[in-house]
Image 1 (tube, one colour):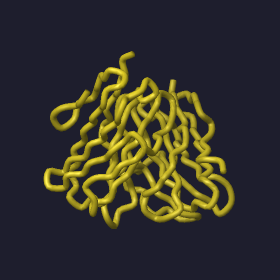
Image 2 (image 1 turned 120 degrees about the vertical axis):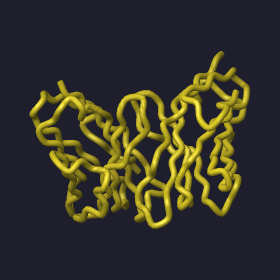
Image 3 (image 1 turned 30 degrees about the vertical axis):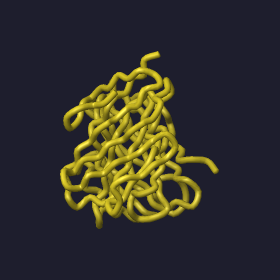
Image 4 (image 1 turned 60 degrees about the vertical axis):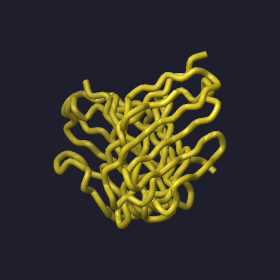
Length: 112
Length: 114
């Protein structure tokens, strides 16, 4: 399953399929990006991060891709599992800034 | 090593009362950030503090809201004379360095104003 276009609020994916969650950012000064997972009633949980000197970074079952030319970030989850159901947020951090700026989030629902 | 601890997890206040939200950062972390999350929205930055200092409060409303991070004890986010619009989840994050990188979030305090 894939959230097409710049960003969709929901994504439904079949268990076992790959998921792609997209995020657009606006600040060309951002040089650090993080993906968070937030389950209902809980705080954001760090998934993976990437710095602007990279265009791809892989973790366990997750890959983050960064396209600075079009200011686009994506999170790929391999072999999506029911436990992956959550809201996923991208966040950006600009150089010389302290805070994170969060996107609106994408709700991922995994179908059995 | 305990994570970021926030309490209370849930707080109900009547309009006009005061709300105090507490955040104990991870051990060894001296940088604390507060964020607010309205229903169905992403987190919005409120304030960044180091021990005994407010570094950036650009996201915090000018009135009724204040934050502190004393030398000893947790960071406190204080909301005076709460209104219904203050109902939200308030999250605290801590990090070992100035930029909010490698920051770990607490479970949040869900404030309901009735």
